Length: 76
Image 1 (cartoon, rainbow, N blue to C red):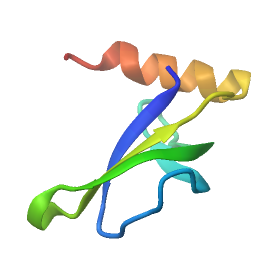
Image 2: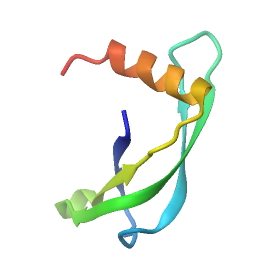
Image 3: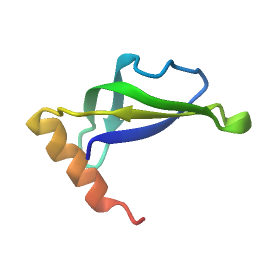
Image 4: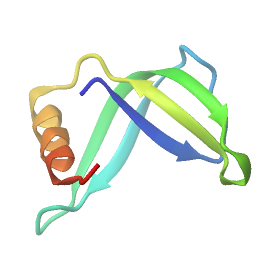
């Protein structure tokens, strides 16, 4: 619950603070989530670009609720 990994075509430095923003569309109307965090790692993932891990230590309660719902829908 304190992190997210994304695929990107740019590299970001470790410890860089930024906001990850995406649309969650599990409801009738898409919800835009903005998650503030720190880059924990950034590794080259071949032709696909970079795999970037973000540490998100303090999600606001509403964002945390949406992330928990999204994760509950995933089949790992």
